[in-house]
Image (cartoon, rainbow, N blue to C red; front, side):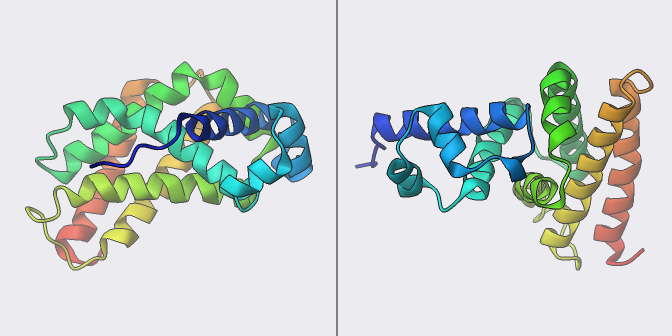
Length: 196
């Protein structure tokens, strides 16, 4: 029988993750304490620490939830026949989400463009990229470690999103997809050749 998580736990985690994302839109995570998060969420500190090690652990969880929302459409539609289609689907889903939530994401990143936050976002996206490309890995084997490919692509995708946020009127979805296609072709060349 499959174990079902207590709904109170699910609600508490969801509430804390929503709280930290909302708070980060107004100020830097560096300036937000666990006490601040608990007060804003009306949650006891002991409850917080029962679920998370620290605020970065909570941020990682919140990003995983957010990422699941972004890529849920890919899960339903992706056939994963080849890595290029996979890369393009991830890029388009990411761009659509960033464009649709531009104000919220811009506010969040205005106060939180520090190495720790960006690295947490990249790690989260890298796990997703790896998961999707892995579906194609048996058809397109490579001498390059999948983790390296995933990290490189996730980093480029995050940087392109931040570039778009800094210059929103200059870029379209088609441009973003085209840039990701070019980068995806480079990644695939690395995968196919095992080198540049």
